Length: 133
Image 1 (cartoon, helix red, strand yellow):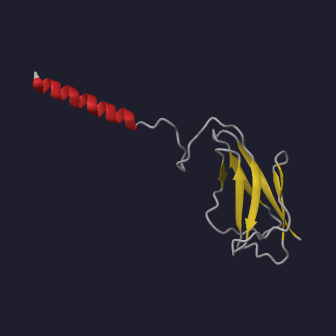
Image 2 (spheres, rainbow, N blue to C red):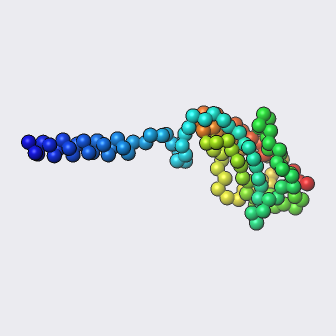
């Protein structure tokens, strides 16, 4: 009888461990939580130079309807070595990811960043337009 009790108890304990390790919330390929939020927009933009100091001459103009970001930078800025920084709506993510310095020197072909909503169902492309002061 004690042998069956130990086996039953062991099975219950293993089941409890498996159930407690089950993921309650889904995550995406980046390990970020997928939520129910549908908001999908850029709320702020900053552009830093190689010395991590802002190279903007004015506040960036973000048009969430036209999905554009217009930024004016100081004359002489090396756009091959800049660090763009985005502030996004809650739970959104940016594609492509910014992992370090970025080359934005091709002004004839503006860079496009995609903002992905928290539920990962809505994607909005924002075109980054840069001009010199």
